[in-house]
Length: 115
Image (tube, rainbow, N blue to C red):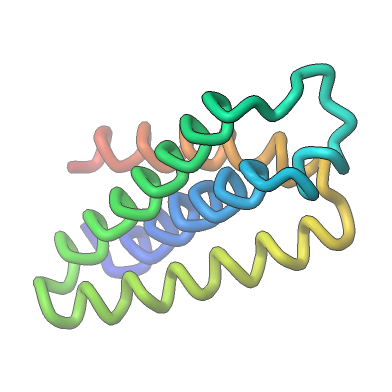
């Protein structure tokens, strides 16, 4: 796997994880005008999914760069994913809510296809 592909995969997973963590918050969940209420169970599931995606984002980085440099690259991808999530939620929250699952599916399918 090339380093560019690893960066893009980790960035997409980090964006999806940060977006799901943001949507687990009452404020951001409310901006979507969802029919579904944010129950404590749903909030815990969203948080668990977000943390799992953030942890999964470390995989491509470590696979491409090794342990030490991969962790630093992973932190950079987390920062970039958080920046995109914050900007997207400020401007177009519905697009972020649709793009997060799409980024997850695309990144995981490409990663398993390449690896």
